Length: 145
Image (cartoon, rainbow, N blue to C red; front, top):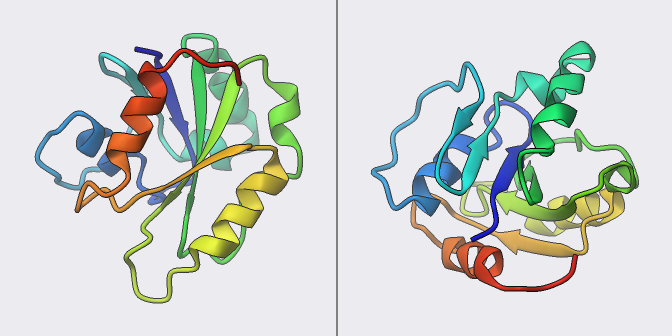
């Protein structure tokens, strides 16, 4: 199975998605440091939100096969600039989280992730484990990004 690194702002759902993908009980806790799991690397949101910490994210992506850019369907703006995936040498996928929340706009989050350069987009409700099998299947497939 390919190793996935999850990148996104604080509270975008990276840790909750990690727990869902690993079939663990969902419980909230703030990620303070990079967490390595069998096929997932969970990163703190601050690494994506604070410019001088972004360099650390770039280094950690070398330890993964696939970069997952997370965008919550409830976000009022996108953290990722247009075509930012062009600067990576890893396959990048988009993951729209929190699709079940009131006021969620998964269509808008999808547009933002496509503008960032993600060609493959997944939609997830991590608490209900909706959409997680699709991500796991994708990570186990042999395909070109």
